[in-house]
Length: 318
Image (cartoon, rainbow, N blue to C red):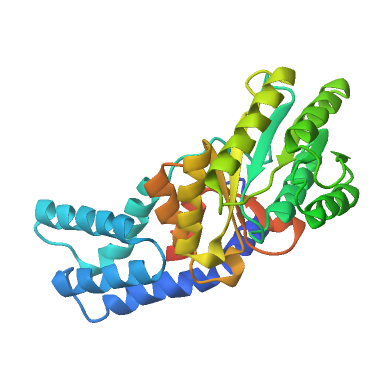
């Protein structure tokens, strides 16, 4: 039995619907690229390269995929055009980094770590606060006691939005007045979480890429302060990216990875875009696993990223 067999029909349908625009942009174009062809030749590969680049897979990752297909042709001497979709499915899946949750049915955290501390980073407008709220919802639904830390103190709206989410989901939040030291908020949050035996702590941080040095210093300070309360915290640094921005999301990921160590990605707004191919390029080029994807506005539309299911949604279920 497949490890993915537990995925409900509703979740699969939701994923397929959420990725429908990207599927049309990738699968439909691939189908047209090989129409009338009996074998994979230079023209097919040129068309395929154009399809992948235009789907925001990225030039370097696209060239890697094309090179792998060429190696297969050289090895097998002949490649039926009808086999191309299955080969693409295999090659793309192999480029996606494994995460540590895709085999889990629910939103879980590693055993023996309490509280499990997640530091969330990302620029404004990518769906950072919304993703934090949805994560809190899923962790609570899985039976976890959750604390939120409003350490993005440079935007009043960020604190207000996170407060609204904490009320909506029914989890605790620690906040201070606007302009407060973000590290102080993080420290207070962890102290409260430890005192109340919380399972999960999610710390929101400000994302200002215009000054990378300040960003780096701030995130380092927050990390150092958290370690005073919970050794090895944060256990996860989650970067939120807006999938609808295509290659701009890749550029943001590259810049954030220079400012701090990113351990996982959450890619939002995939339902409203045909640029979902960026998921493949970011995971491959930066060697960072995609852990969650946002495929709609509903609470249940933040899903654990499972690469097999993602690839199946793009190229049709096997």
